[in-house]
Image 1 (spheres, helix red, strand yellow):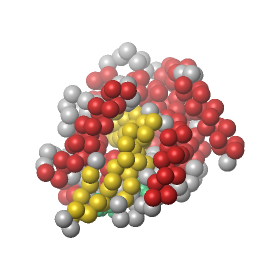
Image 2 (cartoon, protein in one colour):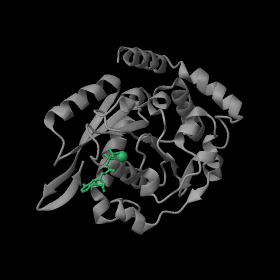
Image 3 (cartoon, helix red, strand yellow):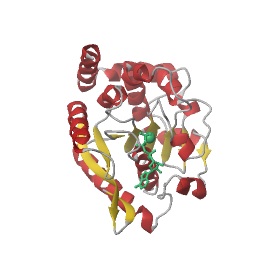
Image 4 (cartoon, protein in one colour):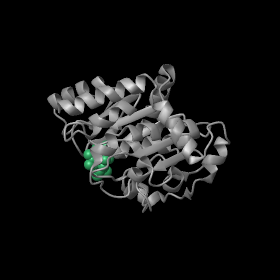
Length: 272
Ligand SMILES: Nc1ncnc2c1ncn2[C@@H]1O[C@H](COP(=O)(O)OP(=O)(O)OP(=O)(O)O)[C@@H](O)[C@H]1O
Ligand SMILES: [Mg+2]
């Protein structure tokens, strides 16, 4: 635990000190891409995917089109955007105290709600490397996993896909054997910096595991500018939330807390 904490402190210091940008520059140079190049061209070059409404609805993803059910997510999107812009934040982590709180549902809904803002470019990353679900939410079978893209064995442009013109999705393909290694690696931080510099997204969403089950989220949070904590009204205990909030706040800025599955008028709703 002490070793991990020391590694985290070191990584956070190096992020604050912008040391990663050197590594990001070398990755960019090695990849042969230029941060000042044609950003729209880079987006357009990614393989486009279609999303089927029925598959999305099965997973409670309701924001592909504007509709009443999408409204709470649209409100959350706008609140998050305003707050992130005010603080100059681009990278949003989504986590929870315990599993099955609705993080992936929230991440996908937020990403598709953002994709309806045509002037914005957004990215969604599935960093729940022990139990990835975003590919199944989108009914996709990715050829390569996000771990391979982060470790550089596969170029990002071969791994990521594009929905419409303004949402990039980087999915996990399978459970990774050693997720903490990837999440903690300086190379992952550098790769993300390179991707951010090249694709110039307005928002990067990271779907993460729960905080209280292992060290994965703790290892990754140094890469996020801010975090949303999703608590499930019918199952998250207060002390679990308190511990999670403390852990998250030690690593990054807390953007807010989403109370999910709050029962109101006998209907299950999501509130921001
Ligand atoms: N507001 C809600 N009302 C009812 N069911 C919900 C709600 N939000 C999410 N769910 C359901 O709860 C289950 C878990 O959701 P999801 O996979 O998004 O959670 P998670 O926090 O990402 O889980 P994990 O920790 O396993 O990654 C799914 O079946 C999802 O459809
Ligand atoms: Mg999940």
